[in-house]
Image (cartoon, rainbow, N blue to C red):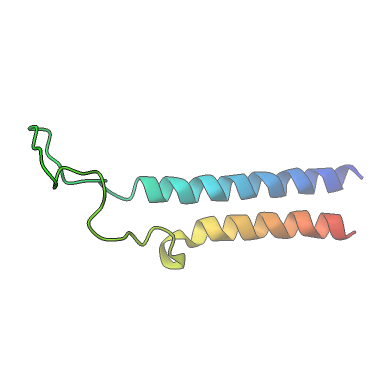
Length: 81
């Protein structure tokens, strides 16, 4: 009975770690804008990126997806038995 709870907790921690890792990779990928600290104003001084980012591609975030998948498998196998 205790090993089941341990697997559930490990699975939950792996899922949380995967989500946090994926979010951190998306946030720290690069600058959000190319505005310079010199006080440039106008339409180009926006924090919006010019192109749509490929923030959650499998190629760049496979470790995060793997952590979530392994955590989900651990939780589902525990609840199945």
